[in-house]
Amino acid sequence: MIPERLVAGWSGRRSARARVVPMPREALRPLAEVESARWIPRGGGNSFSDCAFLSDGLTLSSEGMDRILEVDSDQGSVLCESGVTNRALFHLLKRPEMRAWTLPVPGGTGQVTVGGAVAGDIHGKNHPAQGSYGNHVKALRVLTASSGEVGCSAEENPDLFRATVGGMGLTGFIRKVRLQLIPIPTQALQVQTRRIPNALQETIPLFDEEPGELQMAWLDLAGRRCRGIFHFSRPTSRPPRAPRRVLRLPIPRIALLNPWTSPWINLAIYHLHARLDRVVHPEEAHYPLDSVPGFQRAYGPRGFVEYQFLVRPGQAEEGLHRLVAAARKTPAFHCMVKRFGPHPPAGMLSFAQEGFTFTTLFVARPGVFEVLEDLTERLIPLGARFNLTKDSCLTSRQFEKTQPGLDEWRQVVRRWDPEARIQSNLSLRLGLKPW
Ligand SMILES: Cc1cc2nc3c(=O)[nH]c(=O)nc-3n(C[C@H](O)[C@H](O)[C@H](O)COP(=O)(O)OP(=O)(O)OC[C@H]3O[C@@H](n4cnc5c(N)ncnc54)[C@H](O)[C@@H]3O)c2cc1C
Image (spheres, rainbow, N blue to C red):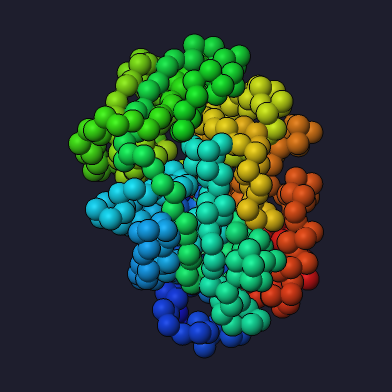
């Protein structure tokens, strides 16, 4: 019998006891126990919600499935096992023959596995240029509940492919991924910033005024006035500076970030980041948070509640107003804003579509879920959508209202998993498989 252990989302919320086992690399079927059990795949555990574990069943980890199987430096394609991390792929790109290529959608941390990136159809700060992760996946090998291991792509089993990309691991265990890289002129980005003194009015127009391959606004929600810093980056032929040192600070699990300290910390960020201009390697531009490992512990033992929504371009300012009003009721110290371009969604449940997305870390304290439920109700009339890799507070009714591809996804997934054996705590909470 596999012993239970405590697992949680990256933010420390939604923990549960689960039986976690590594997925055997070569077996066509996973474990004898899986035949009769319910199960869910798990990658690097960087999701914030309850999507990557299952209390009553097996959590099958891709840990150890970390081989890069084929590299084509002429065509820029890579075939790898699903437990390979984005950081390992960046490492591969340092080989001399690979320097003309880069990862199209690196996401926000190098710890994410390729399997988790496909299942969450993750996005980065460059969505208008590159779309989401699934837009660059050429083919998958998936271990399904009903039919063993099958291949899928835009040509082969296209329904399964579109249900698996962004499908939160609920169609099967992704064993292998064939990924298409993108050519780049140089392995260097010039990162610049400018202040946003009046964030409520000035943030959204800045995405047009300061064009860049990567764009992101950081907004201070802790101070009295909502202000921020706009980051934008472009490729450059200048050489990148030496990689930033990783600050291995022993961050204690006490609430260093709280309503008293955060206004001062944000004030320092606002002044120190006012006019940056530096040339860095793309990995550093995409992963600023990775230079402070364990920073989430600074929210204390109760952690935080990550909340991400997306609204169409015309609703972005109103969405921001409603978010800021919620942050006045229960503390949240900052928010990140990104723009998404008009790429077709790669999967039936993909989060990304054209618009603006707002990601906020609310302090986990009594009453926060009531405020967030109310915020969700206020955002739904604006046509908002919510990111399942982050969610810990949607109800099934709210999800059904906001997810147009859900009926089609259910029809396809029911064919591949007729007994609804692949389940996570998230899928049970939201009733994603009602058969
Ligand atoms: C600091 C930080 C910054 C982040 N920034 C971004 C960002 O900018 N953009 C963004 O989109 N996300 C971001 N995220 C979220 C993260 O990219 C996603 O949650 C991603 O899905 C996590 O991948 P993982 O390998 O850790 O998978 P896990 O968290 O372990 O699992 C996530 C989902 O993928 C499924 N899954 C994992 N492996 C497999 C597999 N082999 N087969 C089938 N299903 C599988 C799981 O069942 C689960 O549903 C960030 C997370 C952190 C911690």
